[in-house]
Image (cartoon, rainbow over all chains, first blue to last red; front, side, top):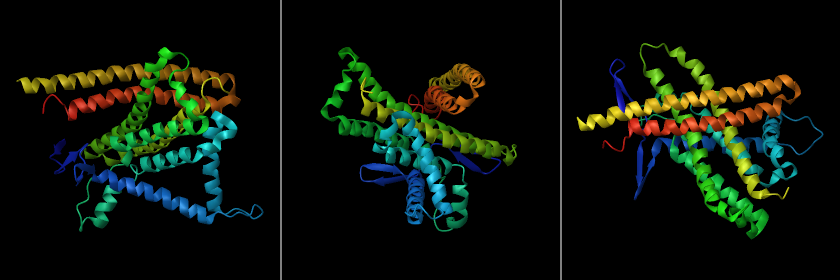
Length: 253
Length: 83
């Protein structure tokens, strides 16, 4: 839907996506663009820090190395607080989730659309670029990934006995456990999507109001930075809980 | 008249529902925060774990608000009963 803002001469589009059809399905084009941008930042950053890492423990670490080590050590506390010494089993999953979601959320604080319009506006029509996590498709994809990871690591660590957990602690818990399987990805995805989409909507409406000066959005942007970080942390933390619960089982501490 | 009625009732329902949900969430998060701050005051060296658990609990409560926000957005913008 769109609401015409007659004073500014343009209309607000909330929840509208550029459609890229491919055969029977169509993709949200603007979400894909920002998604690739976030992926590019994460992958290129990882490659850059990997190149700058040195294996010699004697020499003084460079700034890039110290920065990367700080981040990784901080991320390590998430699974270490939960299952201690076996954190290395699924640490890459947790670290990637956190880094990707944090960078994707922070793309909503940067004026992407305006920069793209200034540079590329003459050649192509630039749509309204929102963070990729403001699209329900992205967050549902991430949540399904977490769901599949729990089953994968549960099966890998405990073999076929893992699938008995649906009947633990009592057989009549089966519908409850199945419901939990459904509600976990639902809550994960809706939590992330709701935070990001609500923030985007408020920002768009606030900037489109003509009578309100633009610096009113500054505290909102600061809040957006904080919330982006917190939501990434919560997502990674909950993923840790679910995967470690699948690995541990009941009463096998 | 009938088509407009759906819009009107949807908007009233969405905003009223969100108001009630926000009220409950604020109440619950206030209780959680007050207990957390109390326990930090009693034991200041446990500030780290207490803060982490507090943020985790707040996010859970917040997600309930977001379910209601999702329904409200669907009702107001892509109402399935008025297409």
